[in-house]
Length: 273
Image 1 (tube, one colour):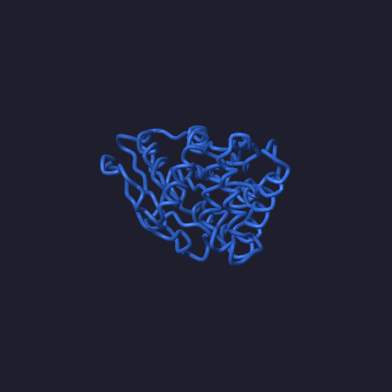
Image 2: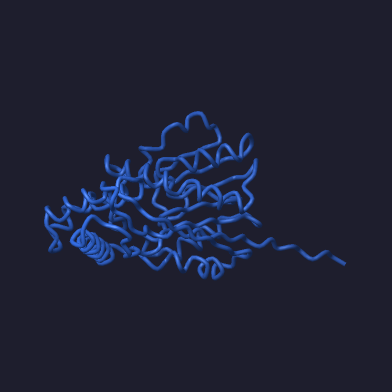
């Protein structure tokens, strides 16, 4: 597993994680992309393309003459792209630069930068790859919200909070993830020289058995062996946590998804006298 990522999309659990994230975030992501003026003929870059759902959608929007470059560390789950002649898929580490030369009219990067140690450097490279007037859209989660709204028992509530706290502390200790980055996106876009910077936040409650809680359960399942080895959590604790994430009597606030966007200025040359 890459040192920068606590979780991997290469496993069956990772595939389900991608499915859950698509179900939770794709509608909001599409809205953010529409707001920056996605249109036919654009050349686009999708970083952290995952299962390819947003890549496919962008390809539909920019058809017939546009194109999309999709990038991820693991491209095994990017299915259904053979019918899109304008799509190129690259297995590539964005830390090392772009797999192809710019310029791009639109760059989308979701749930990637928060994991990277040198996230601001990567963002600056992405901005450099924008065509004049091109836009970048960045989406990431804020840190965990530790607020339970309903649980089968007080003990279950405390267990949920304990597992969440320990799991997030472990990830923050072992990996370069930032739980504050999402709140820094606006400042970072402005600092990279972009204009028309704007952002939206999306938050919602997670109910046991529904997608957000299934994603919580999935995250902990992927970390389970490491948490047992590196913390005081037991197998019984994590089994009960998993059951709780399936129980419709449980509700809590989920992560907040922040989507920020900015546009590269168009430099207009002065007319010669």
